[in-house]
Amino acid sequence: MKITIVGAGYVGLVSGACFAEFGFDVTCVDKDTSKIDDLNQGKIPIYEPGLDSLVNQGIKAKRLTFTNNLKTAIKISDVVMIAVGTPTRRGDGHADLTYVYEAAKEIAESLDGYTVIVSKSTVPVGTSRKVAEIIKSTRPDLIEGTSFDVASNPEFLREGSAINDFMRPDRIVIGTNGDKAHKVLQKLYRPLYLIETPIVSTTPETAELIKYAANGFLAMKISFINQMADLCEKTGADVQILAKGIGLDKRIGGKFLHAGPGYGGSCFPKDTLALSQIAQQYKTRCSLIDEVIQYNDQRKLDMAKRIIQAVKNAGVQKKVAILGLTFKPNTDDLREAPSITIIPEILKNDIAVSIYDPLYYFGSERLKHATDYESELKKATFTKSAYDAVTDAGCVVILTEWNEFRALDIEKIYKLMDTSATPLFMDFRNIYRPEDMEAFKYYAIGKKQL
Image 1 (cartoon, helix red, strand yellow):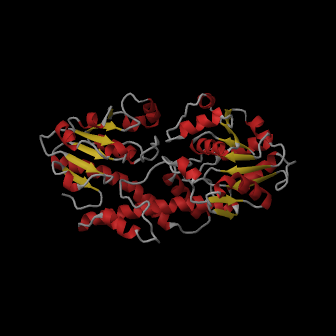
Image 2 (image 1 turned 90 degrees about the horizontal axis):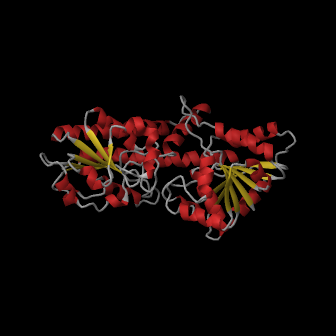
Image 3 (image 1 turned 90 degrees about the vertical axis):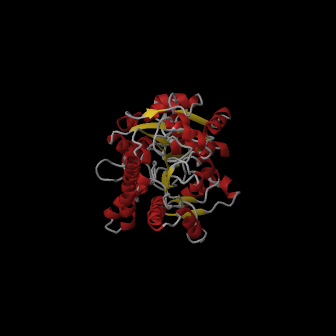
């Protein structure tokens, strides 16, 4: 079976590399010429653990190729997957489907023989139906169900563990309108039958909504535990023990019950907004999601205020050291990261900020990826290590739980910091135990403050 994936971004590249590993012939198509040139040389434009070796294995085996020529790739494909971006549309919160619709039109122009067009992009309910309409209007000679079918096959890849998520998924969701397309996609995912992966077979509309509902629920779970953390701080309770206590209930589960500065990334912020807009479009209530969106936005600002107030109260306003810039570990994604909200607020208060992140350190090639946030970060100083960042700082803040922050030399950090007043250590990921931080004024999330 031959597969073409339109869009060599995060979803397209991970999916393509994994399908090639399964033994399929995969062609990834992208309009960005420089990206395609880099990929053909095995240079990966994104950071995802294990992806570089998987891509290079596929290239070496000649099962994974990259091109700008969509027409040639589609003509020899049994399945064409649309994996282009669906960013939030400016002004109204809806998913912007411009790239999806452009891809549909270009695919239609090149179709030759029965082909299943699959939406891997996260798209609102009804998009598969619209894609089919675009294909038929572009090529009136094509007959849906005979010349082509459109299906929804949403991805559930977590940044930082995407390859494992693809190879060992909790479930596969296949949304089709006919048996012919369903059989093709069953064949596509046959390698996963060996590990008895559950297959959810449904309509395209249900499949499209499953992705939004899943991300909306997980975002709600994060906001719930963050609100419980706020309550714990007021009552003297411990949010980590609370999370364990409720997470052991199998009806709830322990995942996504880690209190912190708020969720970010490319999915949750975008998808919760889109889900809210879908509900409004269909004139139904989605008030829980609306509250999650508002609360999460405010939480990031509240975390900034917490830092600023603590620094002022302690009289250590010289410098704040930020450890971790990305929204989560094992990714280079800065989209909607709490740091992008928190750092500018600190800088507005005439407090210097030094930053260290394992990917965005001083001199890192990845630093150029932060240019989209130049206005937010331009007054901050990037450093080469966590210890460089904390030197002469009166306050250190952990924003991302990178592994290398879990075993910092606490005594060394104390000696490097400005100790003219008791230095602050604000652990927004609850990595350390309060009893081990006696030299500092220690702040944790959802715990009684010392």
